[in-house]
Length: 152
Image 1 (tube, rainbow, N blue to C red):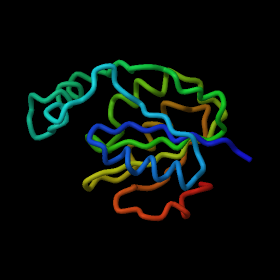
Image 2: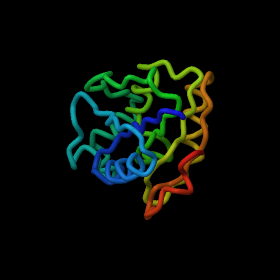
Image 3: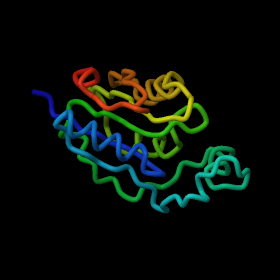
Image 4: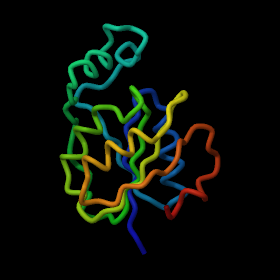
């Protein structure tokens, strides 16, 4: 049987709740991807051009990670969950991926979003992890049953 990890980033708590539900449904371990400097509500207010998330995006600044304690080597499959920012994964995912060796692992991408699709994020993650099997999971918005996603 495959050992599964749900690794997630959540700035507002929405993705965290969905990731915890997914981990429980899959019988998976859970790891939170955290920035060294946590995001405040003002930091993620994308409608403010001076907000932290907008400044990071414009400068392509990859936030430092709070830790690199995920023991990725233990897992065969990693469910990677995050909110969609700017039609793709937040830049902290670009900090997280190179911090570990995902070679030979299956990465199933999940996200939450107010209206964007998962497509661009999946293609960016595939480019970042050429030695892994990266597959699209689904948008977790409104999901109440994870049975259809388990085993992707």
